[in-house]
Image (cartoon, rainbow, N blue to C red; front, side):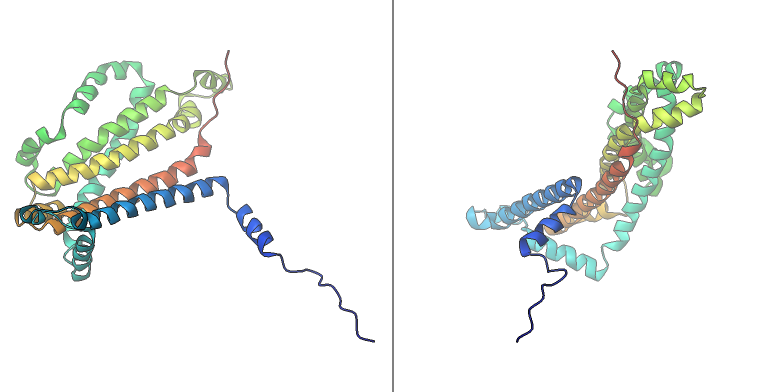
Length: 289
């Protein structure tokens, strides 16, 4: 008599069950992030395809064609600049000015924002200056900074610093003032001093505001590098773009624009990751009548 077929102790999961099990490992936050990434990538791809097909759909005049470049030509130029090494030296100059200026703005803007937010007297004294300088275009300071600091790195750093400082300072100030007063009183009732209140309530509450200010500061810092190199520098990626524009090399101009855009996206993405990690540190608001 043939041996009876024994059932497997751990039968393999069906295909549908495997898919359901894999889906359970994806958290809602990760799923939302993947969907956002896919939608953003798809929109960029559609824009590039439409841009590439535009000269074939619309009739472009010969004079206009001289100042027009399709994405395939732009990315080919960018790859040539990367492979030949002509991109790295000017990019390093621009990145250095960006990093130093943004670092100094963070080092100055965060403590000043906390200090002005915690002290009504200092806030009343310095608020007119902050409002006036924040409303003044940074470009008007460039001639003075070039006279004081020369045409070089430190004039660009000063422009980047002045552009990135005020978003950080103002958002930090607003985050500190937005702290829950009832929660502060509860912490004080347990014997907390001013440093404990700032460390446990005020600064964690201000973190979302600080992150928003940092994202704005990154955009202002990149704008400051570009403006400074367009009008008052001898080295940098912005200088390469200006020289290419004067020679009608539109593909080089767009290649530099793409590099600045990628730098902004990478920095903003890193800030977004930091924001997600710090969100759990924010104290919950108490319900008050």
